[in-house]
Length: 139
Length: 257
Image 1 (cartoon, each protein chain N blue to C red):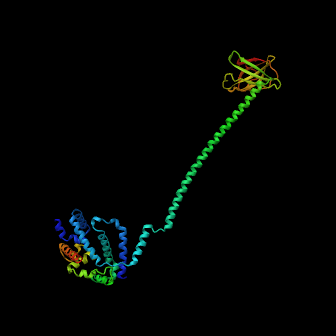
Image 2: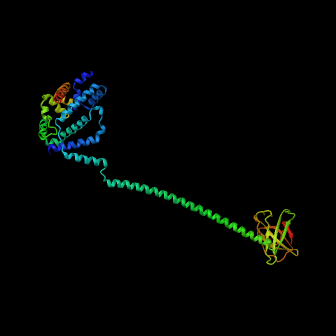
Image 3: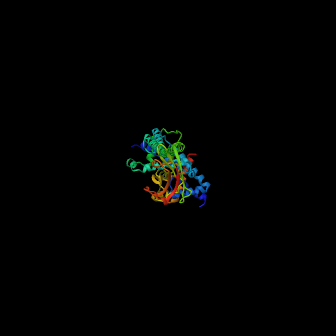
């Protein structure tokens, strides 16, 4: 199985979740897009953690996957956009680690603090600075 | 912790990145609901991540759209995977069953009512027929009575009450040629149980049995025994079935021809 097939499967799952769960969306908690993004992100993380995926992609690092994704979809729908890899490369190593662990791999702040022996407050400030950096990039 | 410190802590970024537990997230959502600035900040962070997401947007495989639409069409038109034909068939069959049951009950009730009506009509008809028979019997009897009383060959004898029953009265009709005798005795008192009136013809001082008869409430003539000739008639009360000779102490009426 190739990475595209996983992606296709996730896209399909995600859209079905939108279809079934749209009534669970609460506008007070944020924009519809964020809600959709979270569903997509969680579905992707679930897939990445699945045995089926891990058995094939044992050796892949997130870096490599991101790079691969960028390479694969070189002809993007938006030619002006900065690639994912490029964007992440603008972050410091610490900021990048937080985004990678939290956003792409689904770790909680407590898990990160414990596993990497960082104070909880530091996890928060790194997350804040990472977002700040991204915000500046997309002004 | 005031609002500014809360925003500065970075917890909102962690929240949007999905790094909070369920309880921590609910806490942030409570803060968002009560502090407008916090909500604004969360929306700004979400905007940033949205842009970040678009930095890597890719067109999904176009095949998927078709598959999804097909799937959703299937889901919305047919929740169980039972083929539509059977589903509609089942609905139609149930409807037909209900309708036919209703019709059966309706017709059964109608049939029952019709049966009842027929029985009532039959009873009524029987009553009419009965009444008609009674009426025609009465008419024929009255015609008969009339013909007897008008017949010039008939001799009428009036018997008047004697000491035992002074107010009683009875009539005998005797046909000169056929010698038939009819009695009209409806004004006699009703006899006691086991007793019956008997008519006697008296010829040359000797009583001749002219037959027993019933007291009828209607004004009708009863045919009794044929008598060749008589000087007088009398009625006595005898034991039921009649006697060979009259009990003179129980004579009610007497009349000469």
